[in-house]
Amino acid sequence: MPLRWRAGNARGQHTLWIICIGFSAWITIGAAMSPAGVAEMRKETVKMFYHGYDNYMNVAFPEDEVSI
Image (cartoon, rainbow, N blue to C red; front, top):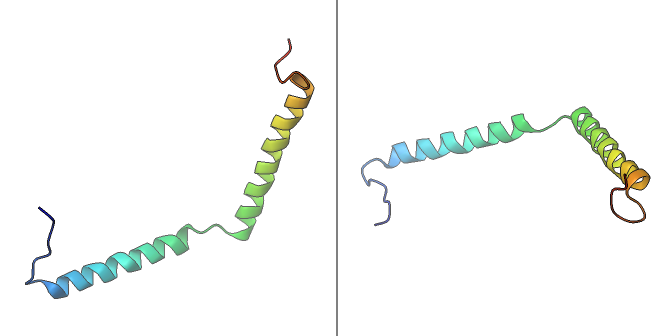
């Protein structure tokens, strides 16, 4: 049986939807990262990539296996 709205409370439904949409917009705007935060995350990502890549080249390349 599908869920149905009660027909007698249309104004309350509209108010609830407006509050939900407003809250969602507030969360989206508030959760956005600053340009400085994005730059810092980008630097961290590049640092982690090169950590893994350099260790692969030093330890596993060219056999693609860890040599001990």
